[in-house]
Length: 52
Image (cartoon, rainbow, N blue to C red; front, side, top):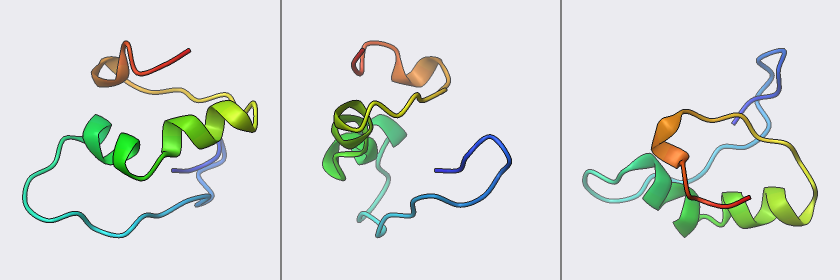
């Protein structure tokens, strides 16, 4: 995850095998953490329905 300037904010450990980005985001609680901290997130259509 990066900020709008492209600076690295968050990197997660690798998950085994082929894992969809949304599954990885949920496994590492990225969506929940951003929601709790009121951090706005821009993502592509693969994340539609992931949360507010």
